[in-house]
Length: 182
Image (cartoon, rainbow, N blue to C red):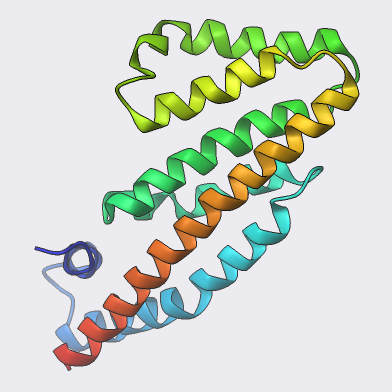
C-alpha cells in the first residue's frame, strides 16, 4: 500500500466507531483532507519565514506540527528529522553571547551524541551531524559564529526545500487518489 493510501486509511480508521454513520465519517474525512491540502502549504510558507537567524526556535517549534506525517513518507521523514536537528541546534546558538557559550553548546551535543560518531560513515544523517559538530568545534569568535550560522541556515533551507518538494508530491498524490476514489 502506498504512503498516501496508508495516510487515507489511517485517518478514516481513526474516525470509525460502531455507532458512527458512514456519511458522517465521509464528511469529516473530506473536510480533513480538504484542510490538509489547503493549509499544509501555508505551514511550509511559515517555516520559510522562520528559516532565518533569530527565528530558528520558532522554526523548531512550528515544525513539530508536521511530525505526524513522518510515518507516511520516507522522504518527508528524512527531511523532517534533518530540519528538526538543524533548527534545534541553531536555536541553541541564537542567543550565544561569548565563546564559552559556543563551547557549552558543542559540549552538550558531544555528551549527547559522542558515541554515535562511528556511524558518520554509515548513515547520511549521522554524517551531517558530524559535519555540523566538527565545523562548530572550529568556531572561535562571534564573527565566525555568524558565518557558521549562515552556512547552517543555508543547509536548513536546503532541507526545507527538499521537504517541501516531497510534501507537494504527497499532496498531489493525495488529491489524485481522492478524486479517483469518488
